Image (tube, one colour):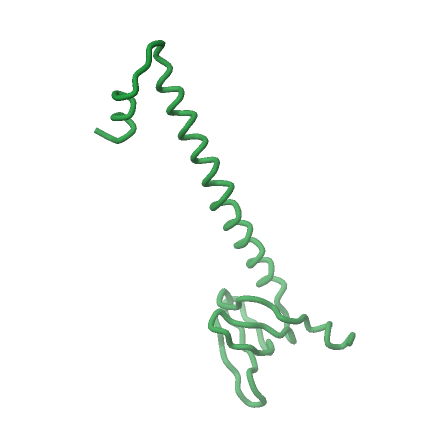
Length: 109
């Protein structure tokens, strides 16, 4: 016997609307979870995907591991970043955490 069925059996009221009350409570709990957990996570994933699509050569980026570098080459699933004068790292594209500065920003300064 599941917990919801046990609650229905224990808390029966005259009038027989216990099932409706339980259904409304479950819907309210789902709505709370959706608006506090699921929706913000989806929005963050959407923003991250847009950031990855807009990534271009010359952008200064930070990886999930905290490595800072400048994008020098972009493939569909990999990004090559220059971390020092002669050091280049190939990083999986989804592991780029954020763009610190766009390629055109430094020319405007």
